[in-house]
Length: 284
Ligand code: DGL
Image (cartoon, rainbow, N blue to C red; front, side):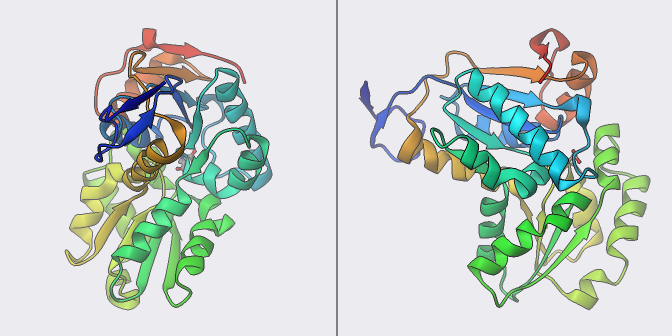
């Protein structure tokens, strides 16, 4: 069916209707920051979110394990007939995006790395950017490579901030403990010494420390959130390749560990209340 101006895009052009949900997966609840951005950007779409909470965190695992987990998560989503897979997890995007795209040539597979890299390249003026991420994302070098591919003249420093993940899940993204952790990772002199004007929050959890980081760093440093930039990339795909949804099913949630913790901690990331009864526990 073809309709005109169904409203899922800011431009009024013809759209295919494809009512299948968009699949989103993450190592756990962090990807709900990406889901929240997607829900805001695409109110006509239905979403199926999978959090691999039983195997969280991915950020400290080997690249081979993360690739295996990611392929299993994507297989769960495609078996449930999604029209695209969004890899909300930065660590999984860094480790597994080529393997995921090769395994699912029939649908778009969107990771957070390329949109995040494009956003920092567009934002920087002094050509120095910093990427904050998990150990696995920093080690994989995917952001560094994606940024260099767009502009090899940029200086990039990538800093692993693993403790931020636990702080965000504890609800301690702001306050004395988060400030201490941020100082420990960035140091009092980071901004002066390296002098970036753009800092990428290259982990699903780090938007919850945005205010702590903004208070520590000079106001001139732009903080780029890979959740928002990924949502924008998916909006473009819906317009160009996927077909517009009809929003009838809203969002459904799957988790590989207990629904109670997923709902309680997930509410912090999603920014709205989540109920355990709305989370289906599955094995992958
Ligand atoms: N979702 C992960 C990421 O964005 C953070 C949590 C984890 O380490 O699993 O890299």
